[in-house]
Amino acid sequence: MTSLTLAFAAPLRTIPTVTSDGELIQRAAGGDRSAFELLYRRYARPVFGLALRRLGDRGRAEDAVQETFASIWRSAGSYRPDRGPGAPWLYAVARNAIVDRARSRTDTPAEIPETAASEPGPADRAEQSWVAWRVHRALEELPEREREVIALAYWSGLSQSEVAEFLGIPLGTVKTRTRAALQRLADIMGEEVDA
Amino acid sequence: MSFDELVGGDDLSPEEEARLRRVHELLVQAGPPPDLPPTLEHPQAPTEGEIIQFPLLPRRRFAVAAVAAALLVVVGFGGGYLVGHSKAKPAQFAARRVVAMHGQTALAVLKIAKADSGGNWPMELQVSGLASQRNRGDYYELWATKNGKITAPCGGFRVHGRTTSVRFTVPYRFENFDGWVVTVQPEGVRIPGRVVLST
Image (cartoon, rainbow over all chains, first blue to last red; front, side):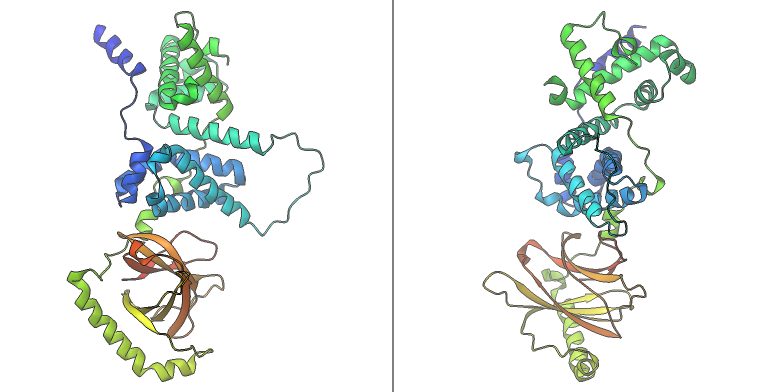
C-alpha cells in the first residue's frame, strides 16, 4: 500500500525531465530523424487541430500538417534558442503553413455572410488557437490512462459516475486520475498556468 | 462538469487549487484535440527529402568531375541538335562551377555563373531523361540541400522532349549548402516530393 502511494504521488509534482522542444528542433536541424519524429508525435495533433480550426476542411488540414512538418524539417536550422522556447517557434511555422494553405484556396468564391458575425475577432481567435495549441500539446505528455479520463470527463458529456462505469474503475480512481492529470498538465504548461 | 465536481478542492492548498482551476479553464477553453487521420500517424517529410551525400567533397570530387565532364561532352556534341530543337535559343552561359546530378533514369548538369553585385547567382540546369509531366500543373523543382536535407527551393520547371534547359537565379549564399536535388512536384503540393536527381 505504501509503495502504491509513493509511486502514485511521486510524479505529481515532478517536473518532466523529457527533452525540450527546443533541443529537439536543434537536433532535427542536424539531421536527427528520431528527434524530428518525437516532435511529430508531440505536435501532429496540435497542428492538425490548428489547421482544422483555420481551414475547416480535413483534407486541406492534412495537407497543411504535412507542409508544416516539411517546413520544420527544412528550417529547423533557423531556430535560435536564445530567442525563446521551441513551442512558439513551432506554432509560428505551423501558422504560416496553414495561412499559406488558406491563401492557396482558389476554387471556392468568398461567401458574404447574411448576418453580422458573432464569432470572436482575429485577436480572440489567435488567443484561442494558442491556448488550444498549448493544451493539446500538453495532453500528448499525459499517460494514456490519465488522458483517457480527461477526454471522457471534459468532452464526452458523461458524468464522473458514468466515466467510472465506462472504464470499469471506481469513482474514486476517476477523481484521483483527474486530479493527477490536472497537476501534470499544470507542470507541463508551466508559466502559462502559474501566471 | 464543474471543477468542484471533477476534482473537489477541500484538501488542496489555495495556491494548488488556483493552479488546477486554471488548467481546468484552459481545458474547457481549448476543447477536445482532433483525432489524427491514418495518413498523419507518421511523419513523411524527412524520408521524402532524403538524399545521398553531396559529392563535391574531396573524396568524391574526381569521380563527379569525370561524370560532369562526360555529361558536358555529351551536351557539347549534341548541343546543335538540342538548341535547334528548343523553342528559345539561350544566350551564352559563363559557368564558373559545374555540378553533375544523376538519378535512376536521368542525368543533369547544373551550371552556376558568377553572382552579380547584389548576390544573385545565375544557374542553368540541363536535364536529360526526366519524364514529361502528363498533368499541366505538375512540375519538377530544384532544391539546395545541406547535410542531406532539402533546405531551399531554387526553381521549378517542366520538361519537354528528351532534354530540357532552364535558368534560375537564386540569392542564396552557396556556402550554406552542400548539394542539390530535383524532386517531382504534383500540382498543388508544395512540400518536397520524390527525389529524382541528386548530386
